[in-house]
Length: 244
Image 1 (spheres, rainbow, N blue to C red):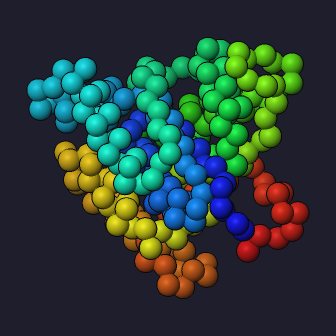
Image 2: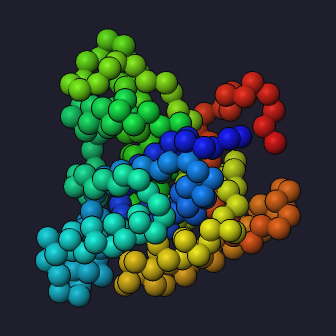
């Protein structure tokens, strides 16, 4: 498949989710001459930024630090547009205003592929909600009779792939796709390193990428050393034939 000019949109609940779970796929898409945009829905100050608060930062200072680190990571990965929306963290609720905001973005961006959270995460209450949020926004964006200021009604459905939750087994996550990130693993490492107080977590996700490479090799990607796991939300129909 030719990825030149193809748009990938990542919708993540928290800043770290973009780095731990899918930064390899992001870097690879850019390497293949595609474009990546990302929406980070919250600053993660409800839990992900605990170490910043414990270090003495105020909530506002923690937000500023997350913004600085995430911008640096976005530059490393080659993300063309990165937005932090500052929505409620650890109490994310789907509302019409939030849904229309994302639907507007979808109509303007017109992504060819979307990466977001798996529909269940017992360790984080926000993650399991985001998939429903993205799917609902996509339905709204496609509604010809739904008017959103600054947009033209209608949106072609994009395939959604869920990245891996922290504890895959406990959340019923079953991979249907392994992305070989061997040739961009340094980009992932460098991006994760921007969160300077998360070194142990970054190390665990590097180990996870190595483990997923074992899975990828078992299913035919013989020389893979690092991989990320994804699960398709919809059946594959775009090519009208077997994809292998």
